[in-house]
Length: 123
Image 1 (cartoon, rainbow, N blue to C red):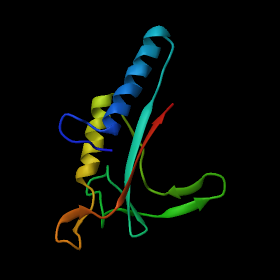
Image 2: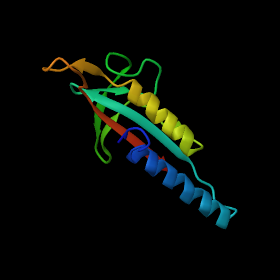
Image 3: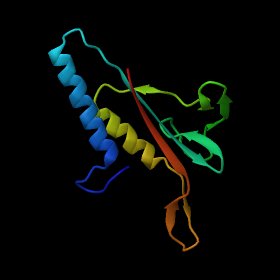
Image 4: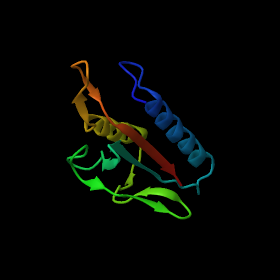
């Protein structure tokens, strides 16, 4: 998801492509409007945490996962954040990655011990 160095990773490629396509569509059709919003969470030991909120990550702002009859599993308390550009989307993603939980693994090295979910919604 993240990439390294000059290779920005899949999130950066997708965000650039999304905004390029939407701006092209807006240029072609002056009445075209769009909204892009994101959320970034991690799941540690069956608990969900919002990585985009201050103090995000394990141990802060624990959120409950509930099952909705029609929509399936829902995480309560995870906020959608509107983003106007690919640059801002990438900045939020990088900030969320910095908030991820890291622990020492069985080999004595720091590693990420949680699953992350980064969602982009375009309307």
